Image 1: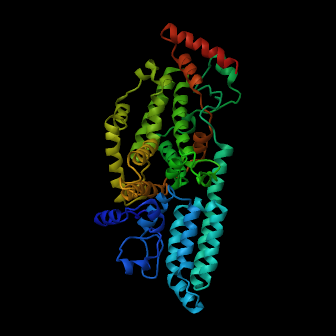
Image 2 (image 1 turned 180 degrees about the vertical axis):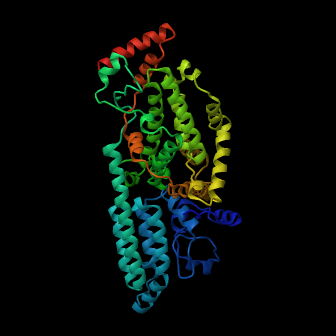
Image 3 (image 1 turned 90 degrees about the vertical axis):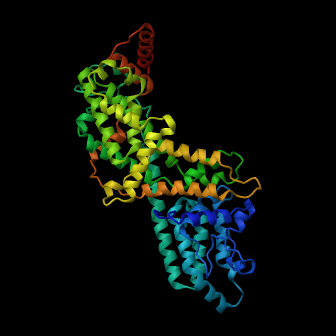
Length: 480
């Protein structure tokens, strides 16, 4: 899908302006048999291929992505199956066989695009049944296409198995950011307050520096985690989020087949990384140890920026800007903050994240002309990416004033989502460090209250309000 929407810009506008129709027309005429074109002189694109016509990949992707806002994917699949095969039958076995043989390769191509880009649609049993029925129908006219369909189904089943296993792992082994803290090692944390000790049931023998003290390696391992989580997010999840905002939608249940939202799981990873950074900084008792950890994460953030991993970069900056960390003035006083100031400027939210967007464009251009896999990596600040798509959907009407579909909106939505798919396809080139990966994913982190108390224990309260807060936190955490 990398090149799906890299088409001539003039062609895009022509197709967008042609394909401005009502919802009913969007469902029917976007699927219609193009044989009517000869009668009506239409040059509009259709989803369903014919003997003389094949939709291009960009149109297929845009239609499959946006159509689910208007109709159930199963309804779309049923209509596609009818128009592909049944609509062409004339009752003469020989003629029917020839027609199916002529169109079969194009049908296979359409279904290949669908199953590879939107595999989760086929977790629905009725969708898979329709796909298998199509295989039998194609066997009527073309043995080669029947075999191609069988291979397509085998690939789809393998992919669904992998996706299911990943979702299961998210459910069974995820560690929420509010997990209870572990006991820190003597080199990293020393003696904490009795309140924290009372809550530390599991002994943690390591801190981040004892596991990985190379900023470049840690940035590489963070990139591994980011790219793996990105790989499991389906493009339909961006549209699914819009559908789920509509309680009355009668096909919402179709999208509830997943055990967990991979998109939400990825956002949760961002939160976990932020809390992990704050926890590691607040853990050490000695100021010089805290300063060392702080400097280390600044270097890690810089390496993430150089790699093109903007999501980890922003998560690290967020963790360092959390109140329990930002109030450690003595610790910050021992750190050269010049590098941190530069990074903060890159992620400055002013002017709609102008600096970040400039950096992202640079990384995207580098990726487009890259000669190595390393240079192809682009991992966007995901929360902002989601926000942009949300405002595109909410800020642009789905229908024009005349009631017709605003296809240009959906073309832009598809363009942005397809860009995400291109970034997602890159294979992480860095060597895995299993111990570091396990630590990043599995080590426990402090809650908000535990972070605040650890901060007060590291550098004491500065006023009566903070002293009262520390006393309250000690009391409440000791009872847990």
